[in-house]
Length: 247
Image (cartoon, rainbow, N blue to C red; front, side, top):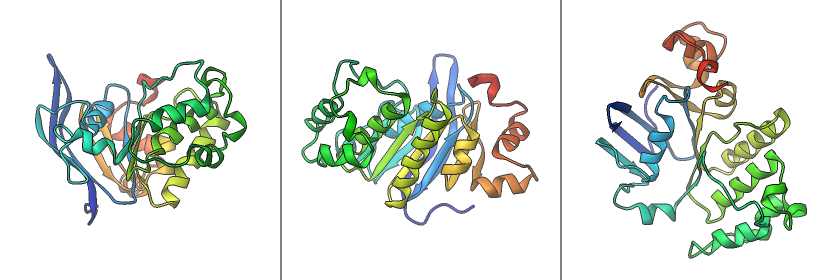
């Protein structure tokens, strides 16, 4: 499939090594404005390292990254005002109250949305005084979405947003991401869940061993090899199931 006409994320030939291990090996893709784009694959495939390069948390050893025309490695401060992120390792103090978390994060930005409006929008108004440690899995993930959206970013990135959630909370979180698409937000979803990628993403980059082994619309990729699902395509391209690494 051709690249988006109006890309807001451009990744070109990036490589990243950690000692003898090559985590990302010549990865290239673009993400268009208003697109939900999936970076999918097993643990250790290079997904999170690629996201960290996009966010400016790591500098690639080779290749280039541009987000909204900016270089994250040298213009990270400008970029953080325009990009929101929920990272896999993100944590909040368990005794922090839900509304307090939003007020705290709002202090990091010159301009933000009304925290109370966000609580209502994401179904957390009744839990505004609850401690973060007392939230259910689905409530906690909705809070992280609200925090990522607090400063009205143009791009939102989610890293393994539904890992560990029960089926109900998982679907609630999917609906939250679908609401972002409806609102025209650009979303980057990093996930090992092939069902999640098929449901949410306009296009996906399938990672294995630090490389992209398939790139395009999920339905098109599946049709190309006569498979029944993205999981089948992953098995065909890599010779193994994602469950080997992640379950």
